[in-house]
Image 1 (cartoon, rainbow, N blue to C red):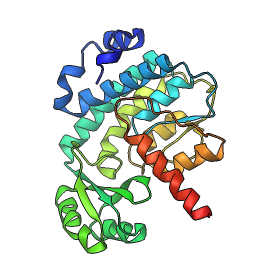
Image 2 (tube, helix red, strand yellow):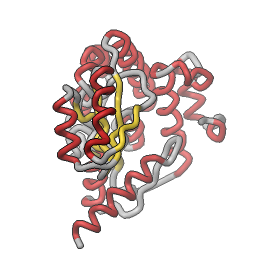
Image 3 (tube, helix red, strand yellow):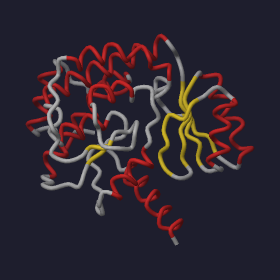
Image 4 (cartoon, rainbow, N blue to C red):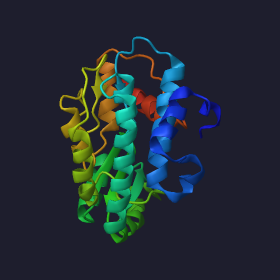
Length: 257
């Protein structure tokens, strides 16, 4: 994922701070994937040279890159926070195995009821017609089998744990400890928090809380649009979020008609 960004100074600085290269080890999971994603996102932000954004947001881990872009977090501090977060989430996944299921289509209320029936939570509210459930693996299996009864399709995600659920609670203390001595600056532009779909107010508290809270991506995108954003630029590997943004905004236009 980093081939075009390998020579970017920020990416090279991040590798130096980490003390290891995560990119050849992506198939080993969370401990290496999260630092790699963060470094690519920040390097792309630096290369893009966007001067006056209305605001920014990141999906889950992407919040850290967005906070660096806005100047709320120093890059060096954020590299260490991402390393701690990745290790803590990997440890939580090992201690509390779980899984995640994207439910595509179906009525949103029915999907939420399905999650409740199986003891699962809504981990991501990504876009109209796309909710992600998280929890114990056997419960995810049962929900996947039942999704077709709702006129929906379940797709198991290739992740190592039940992110954004209470199974991630053990990761909170290590991240809180790492954040305690990090200086938080006034952002140059608003960064929307996944957990509240509003601009960050208490960065330390919200980053920790967002480990177990729903990623409210649909509402986050709408908040940026309400703030005046018209052009959305995805910075990072892949173009999944851009597709979600288009779906969210199309749905709003259809409702408003």
